[in-house]
Image (cartoon, rainbow, N blue to C red; front, side, top):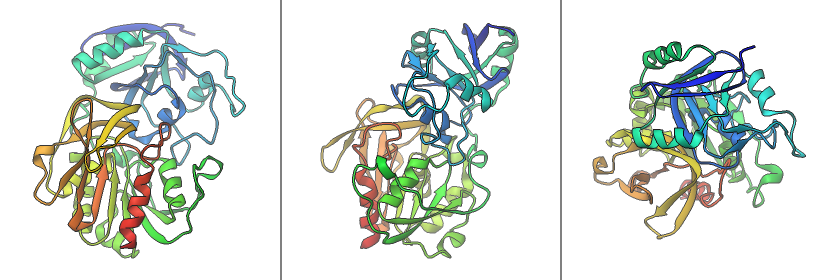
Length: 369
């Protein structure tokens, strides 16, 4: 078996390392995340669909994997490929049910280890996220694959991660909850653009009965369920390309309380008349600083996105509520008269800090009015 693998960026930059997980070729947009813990959550977050994710933390895999920490509802990894500095040869944790290498192999995830991830991260920060390929083929073959891959801009990837049919969700956070679950008082619809399991758990703990529907659901189909509110989930790809979702939200705005996160934030902005654009290298990690403009409070947040709302494009009646402290980009908006609000980050904190859990209670308070 070939013990040499390569990661080749579309600009020709090449890294030599060792193969990990499944053997084969992975092609996608090369990005990085600064999260230190929660690599299994990264692997299974549907927002990473179509991306080759670099972990900036130097050693990955030391606590193994388990069934409870998967963020995909179907427990399957969603990213295109995985890049590590050091893959721990030992999985040592009381919750571990297997090793990272075996997990990647079992799910067909192509990965590479023993490369200089610091150098790679600096390269992507300086030149921007770009397509890449991982595999045991020659660097020349991988370069061709990377250059032939479609650009992330203009791609609707939601179709690849949204469910085929509606389904109910009843599981809460259980023993991991920071406070007792509230009684069920509201019935909501969650539009699944690539939703994370812990988001659904947090909605249940906030007192919501949850029905999850596909991203292709129409406004009439959603309103026919007579929900008290509608939640707009995270997801992958270019929000401007998800035209059917934007049309659905235009039919929901002003008719029912709306709460969006991540891709849902971007789609809500587009439905309200705003615009989005692609960031140079995105925000990915569990240590992103955000300022709440209404309170002045600083939150450390979990994020995973490569596109952003253009603050200058927000129409009258829509206000910016949160900004990223590193670059001043949009992290939240509100259309109070229309009972709609959203944030760019992931308040369920899986993995990450719990600074933003209050947003789920803000949603239920909006439904109670």
